[in-house]
Length: 633
Image (tube, rainbow, N blue to C red; front, side, top):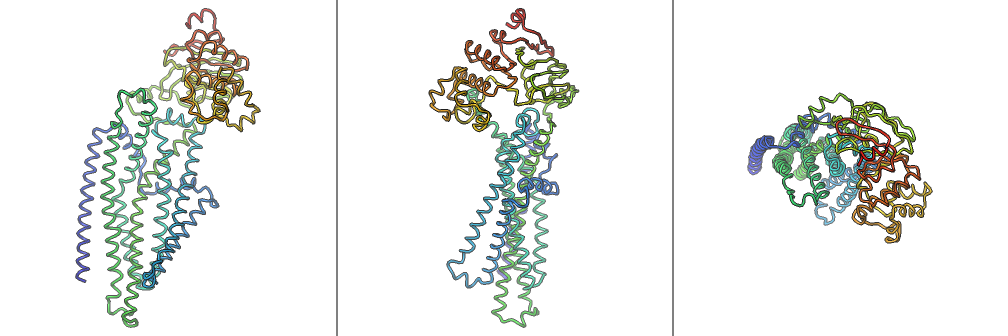
C-alpha cells in the first residue's frame, strides 16, 4: 500500500506539472497570436473574420453539418457504404469478445504462443473495412462536389465572381481526403470504446456492484468536459491551417505556370512565413494537449480504476469474503481488475476521441462552406468579400443587381437589348448596350485594352451575370469560343480535334476519321497525322505543337463542331495571312457566323459590321465601309 500511495503521489505531481505546462503554452500561444495579428497579411485577417462567422467547434452546429455531409456519403440505407459500416461494427464486436474471452481465460491463454492469432485476424479484417470505407466515402463526396463544381461554369464563377473560396483545389483534394479519413477513424475510435464500456459495465456490475462503474462514468464526464474546453481552439486552428496550405499550393502552382516570368525574382519562402508561424503554434498547442490528454485519459483513469476495483476486496465485511476462498477472491480480483482496466482504457479512448472530433469540426466547417458556395453559385447567387476601401467605394456606387437581366434562348440570333456591361466587382463599362446580329453577319469587335471586349464575350458565354436588360442568344452548345492560346487536352491526336467530345460522341455524330483528316488539311495540319501515324497517338500536345499549330488546331476543332456562332479572340495572330484567309472563307462556306477580336487590317474584308468600344463607356455598331476600314487601321 505504501508503494501504491507513492505511485499516486507521483501521478498527482505529474498532473500538476502537466496543467502548469499547458497553461504556460496557452499563454504563449495567445501572445504569439497577438504578435502575428500586428503584422499579419490580409489572409490572416480574413481567416479571423471567417472564424468568427463560422465557428469550428463541437456543438449542435457541427452535428448538423456532419449529418448533412453523411447523407452525401451514405445516400441510402441499402448501399455498399452501409455494408462496410456494418462489417466494421461486427469486427469491433468480435474484437471486444476476443478481449473478454482472453480476460476470463487469461492464465491458460498467456502460456500459449498463438494466443494473438484470432485478434490478429480480426484486426486485418478491420483494417480492410476501414480503408475501403475511407475510399468509398471519398469517392462519393468528391463526385458530388465535382458534379456541382463542373456544372455550367461554376468553376469559373468561383474564381472570378465569388471570392469566398480562395483555393478550391485544396478543398476538393486534400481537405476531402482528410475529412473522410477523420470521419472513419472517429467512427472506429468511438464505436469500440462505447461497446466495451457497455459490456464491461454489465459484467462489473454483477461482479463488484454498480458503484465502481458509476465512479468511472462520472470521471469520464468531468474529464471529457474539461478537455473539450481546453481543445476548443483546435477547430479554428485547423481551418486556418488548411487555408494556409491552400495558399501555399496556389503560390506554387503560379510559380510553375509562370516560371519564365519569375526567373529573376524567385522567392519561394517569402509566402510561407505566416504558414510556418501558425504551424509552430499548432504543434506546440497539440503537444501541450497531448501531454494533458495522456495524464487525464490514461494514467489518472488507470489509477482511479484500480482504486475502485480494490475497494470491495479490501473491505472485510463484504459478503464475498464469507463465501469465497482466498484463491477465488484473487481470481475475481484479477478478472475484475482486468475488466475495469479495459473499461478505463475505453473511457480514455473516448476522451481522446474528442481531440479528433474537434479537428474534424475544422474540416467539416470547410467542406460545409464549399457545399454552400457551390449551391449558391449554381443558383446564380454571388458574394464578394470586400478586401479594400476601393472595392467598397465601387460597390457603393453600383446600383445594378447581378443576375437581374434575362437570357432568352433562340437560334441564329444574338441580340443585346438595353443591357449594362459591367464587371462582377461593379465597374460599369457600358451602361446601355443594344445591337443585333443574325446568322451570316460577321462582326469585328475592336477598341483599346480594357474597353470591355472580353467582358462582352464573358456575358455572352454566361460566365458573367447580366446586370439588366435582355440577351437573346442560341443554346450554349451552339456558341463556340476560340481563344488566342487554345487549350490542348490530355489525350490522343483525335482528342485535340474533337474536344470536348469523346470518340463515342464522334461516332454518334457520324463523323469519320477521313472527315477529321479533311479538317486538318483545311488548316494545313495534315502533316501532323502523317508524322504521328495514327489518330490514337498520345503526346504532350502543349509542348509538341507550336503556337501557330495550336491556333490552327483550334480552328480545325471549330470546323468539327460547326456552331451557329463563333467568337475568335485574336486566335489567328500566329497564323500566316493566306491560311487565315482560307479559314475565314471556309467558316462562311459552312455557315459559321463570326465575332472576331483582332487588330489585323486584313480581316476587315471578312466582316459586315464592326462594334467599336472607346473604353469610356461609349460604343458604335455600324456597317463596315471603306471609311471604317481606314478608321480601323
